[in-house]
Image 1 (cartoon, helix red, strand yellow):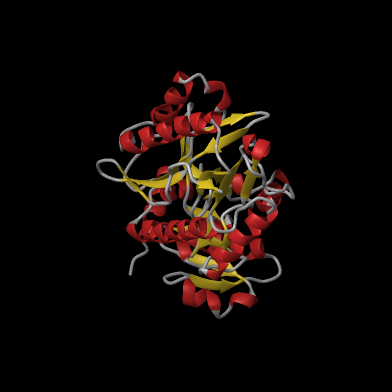
Image 2 (cartoon, one colour):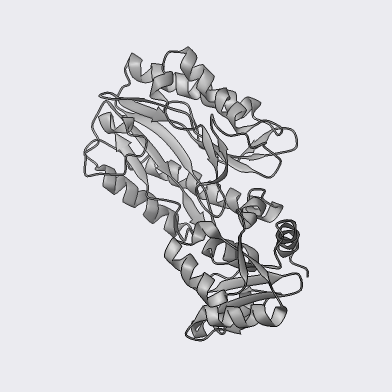
Length: 357
């Protein structure tokens, strides 16, 4: 069966004036081939599609990389790359410039001389920004797994438990449920620490009167989820309820009005304008959302400086927040997929203020 991703990439390579493309990014390698090994590069020209990898994957690579010629490279992989490119008559080769440091680039340039190296300008990432039905289904499974983890952790959080133990319990539960790991280092921030947007779990004890912000996700079948919920331990004060309700109102507004055809900055304004109207604009310093897929931060972004047009198949987070130093903070985040006429929400955990007493 033809590899549609490879076909689309060939079109982009041609548009960029290349004869072939060298894939060195491991995520892009897996996206194109299905190969999950830890080493290898991909070469794609108008006629050829080759995965070069080493002896360790002699059996695995042919099973996973259907439709690709498998080449077991020698001690110097780029010597074998050069030999193939010379055989194919390649004169201009696209490279993934964002995956190479300068020293690597110079080394590759020397080994592949006289082939001209051309920047790929994120060609594969441009394909990855719109997910197909299979990808959306896997992200939905990862989101379902995160939802189950949130339901589980509500029974674990209580005064005297450390943030670190909550983080560990979340990861342990998700792995038991089938996750290959976490999407990123889990954020558990309680009390005053909840004003830290990326407050990694610490040894702080959770206390009564604390907001507890949980930002986590499951890595599953090569894709990820990313969810944030904020709960309160003990009875909330009026201030707790005020900032929680503002963040929730802003997030629900975005979920109601986000649609294809919007730009990223228009999507961002759906949350930011409400938070600003209540006088808390200066305490919402990050963007409203980002793309997720095989990585937890992908294009597109829902941000003030984003002109990307949202199209069906894009998956983004919607995660407004308010962070008050010396008091605490609230963030509420869902994963959503853009549809033909709006969005579908993938994460379904409850969002009313949960009080754990």
